[in-house]
Length: 339
Image 1: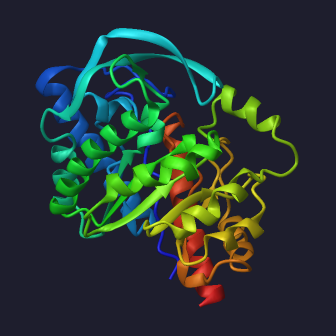
Image 2: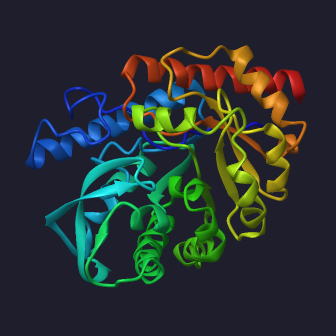
């Protein structure tokens, strides 16, 4: 009960890449970089195990960015043709590559890190991939001319890699869709269909991570504009409950998402955000158990998976380590209290 996991990303060590950045530059190159990525993956696997995390990840140590780490292996994208694009409905701007031709994978994307992680942990392994809608929102297009067609093309590429990851021994594949709380009507119109295409035929479990974004200033300013209650999910939770995905990851601690909305995810496992990634203040075990107790009013306890609100990539490494420990300790306290 209360099997723990994290949203996905963890800070990159200073010897691997720039710290405290969402788009860090690597500090090495060639074979030295490949070796360092592997070392960082093993470091964070051990840290998660030590903290009592049950469903571990590779920490996304081999990816510069959670979206572009996948795009680098997709043919039909020109990384030299970069344009400034408003991301998440112009919440912030980024320089992004451009789709210039038909999309298809050049080969395997994450085989090395997935197989390394699988070989070095006996715990359940989760692997994250960007969702189709979020990719579409993070790239320019000069070929398809239609967001839905573009999303479905990416979904096919994602499905190819997801099937291979499942064959590598991954227990759960999570698609990250922060764009789902920006384009609500599109979620129900085509976003979930694109997710279904990305997850088609998978034998392992599947999840979708939706969130209000990393703890960066643009996101924090946007959250401050949303009022005393964040009810955006009210529009999409029923559709997600009807979807074929097994779990939904939602931020809950220190967010203004009413806990009562969780009941709209009936029938799904809820990866319950009990660790705040927008603050360096480390949660206590009591705080974590308290969020779990509140969620239990609306979600069966056997469906609650304590998790982080979002990725921890930009966070200080020591803070992230302490927050992992708090997640493990809080879940254990909840087991003792609510078993």
